[in-house]
Length: 110
Image: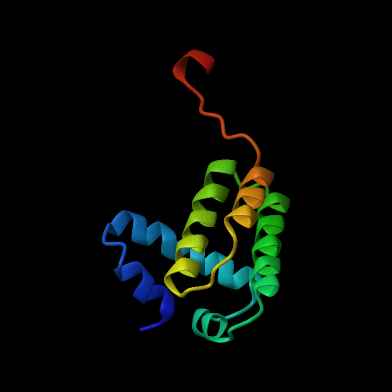
């Protein structure tokens, strides 16, 4: 069982687990690493931050909707927390702020 599967088992909710699995597969494909190698590397915090920035740039280039970007970021952050990869809350706030405003369309605006 790999590190992502172990993390997902702790979530419990199957819909959330399925979505997070897809998001994390995407993340590791973009940065070009396997989950186990990536987590076991014990890289410098700045390298993890750069990987997250790379992934966020990928999402912007591919015009991924803001809500999806936030959901993917939440999955990545949860995985990092599970394996004690501690990035400062300030870093996460800056990344989140870079996504932009999330708007919801209602029937009235369609």
